Amino acid sequence: MQTLFRGKHFITLQEWTKEEIDTLLDVSYDLKMQFALDRPTDYLPNKTVFLMFFEQSTRTRNSMEAGITQLGGHAHFLDTSNMQIAHGEVPKDTAVILSRMGHAIACRNCFWKEGNAYLREMAKWSPVPIISMQDDLYHPLQGIADLMTIQEKRGKNTRGLKVSVIWAYATTHKKPISVPLTQALLFPRYGMEVTLAYPKGYEMPDWVIEQAKKNALENGGTFRITNDQEEAYRDADVVIPKNWGNWVTNESKAVIDNVLEANRHWKCTEDRMALTDKHSLYMHALPADRVNEVEDSVIDGPHSAIYDEAENRLHTAKAVMALTMGGR
Image 1 (cartoon, one colour):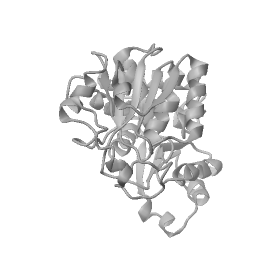
Image 2 (tube, rainbow, N blue to C red; image 1 turned 180 degrees about the vertical axis):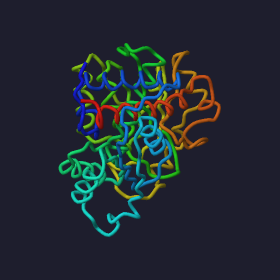
Image 3 (cartoon, rainbow, N blue to C red; image 1 turned 90 degrees about the horizontal axis):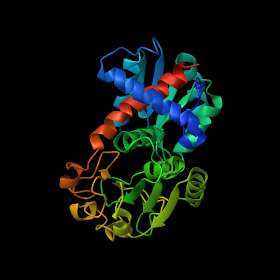
């Protein structure tokens, strides 16, 4: 077990070893048990985490705010439109100043070709951990909660588990690629047989595919791509149908275009769930574009694990903060 975490940045799980991720999961399970028993877990008394949001949030903000409170600390919610960032203050100055006032800086910045670079720049100058609450490339807090949920439902030995990450039609906004990208990199490291399915035009960056295949090769998993959604559903143990924007092929911020509308049929339905294993899981990071992405009968049905998945955002966020802000 790895035990040295204090001050470690949490920007992508790809930069954490499996041993470190396993420790993170062990702490998450323990914190969840203590929460169930209503036992105090004040591991971070008088510690402050700054939560910088360039965009809206429900699960991420509340899991971090509730999490730090339950650990005995305090969160400062920072809407960046009301910070001096709006007047041009650079990441270096923001990171240096906030790091002198608190014990961690968490940030959500999903702007394409800006978000991850912003977090990396803060990490260069901050002596306290930078925690990604999602950027344009990665969503490690979602990824670790997803892995925890899969292990809870299917056992900790996930080798050979068939997991399909599937694009789905949605019109709410042009979503980042960070959730499926994180899953594509993480799940093969745990021996899963991962299928990434999408219609043409919604590709991931080439370096992601190369790294996912390498992760699979090194850890006894597999990774493949298909443009056939039925193929992705067939015999799957876990399906994660979720929309993402075509940022790689079209950097326009427009939500609806011809490529999107040509793929309205990419939707999670009861008929497609019938193709999966009879004990399969339906997962989604939420918020889901109900009716467009998924039928209500599926997301509210017996295969759905969405609320357990969402709750695990709390326990895993607490584990990240407890280890990186406290720990040793």
